[in-house]
Length: 313
Image 1: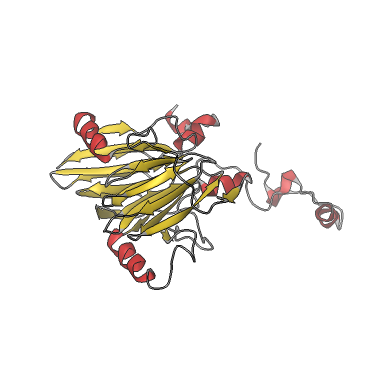
Image 2: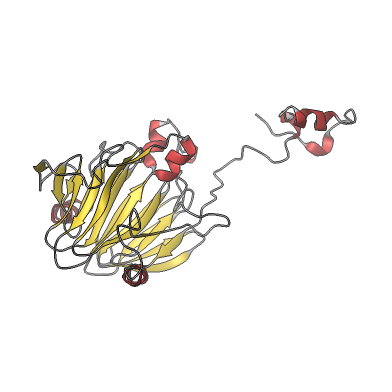
């Protein structure tokens, strides 16, 4: 539908627009602002979060935030646009989380899909998903699909740090949010599956990346979130045009350099995170002998809804 030229409007009866407003109606030929435009106009901006800074802040939070006090001891990566208090990108949110030795983050379930990328974890760190105990280790990507019970425990001797990714902003916008605490607080495990299909072992991902460069992680297991592991040797690079989906990248090994529209050139090391909202071209270059990233994206949402990037048609 073409936007009207409000400057060329003929005279209208006095009080006409005011009367429409009282009836919750608005004239489509005289919109206050255009509602369609030639190319995407992203609200969210590229931004970077540093693991070292987040880890220091989480360490400090241990003095006054316990699992009994908080659902999760985590730090949300809030996109720095005016008025935003939660999302990292339009449809996704990411957060650094810490579970200390001897702690259990209580079990709950929710309609949003979730996953966690393990940065540091010792022995006896695991998550329980729908009663199944799933061990986790450094580099693992562990899935928690919608409405699955899940809780996390660390009975080792070292703190466990990981990054949570969820589609909460999407679910909020769709107004289909459900959340429930487990009636027993901590769900008991009825089985132990170290090689659960919900667990993508970091060691296996590294092997696949060294063979293929970029690999898809658990396609189809989480309907709203796409996952890729990217491996780059020193000097290798990828160039990406602006696209309609948004991506969050986390470095899991080595150091990379990224050039992002409207952000510029940044270097990222292990544990660092960058968000590239829709319609921002970007490139990635490996600076270390070997570097790895995990890309988390809302691309499956665009595909499922049938949206097409017409600039590439």
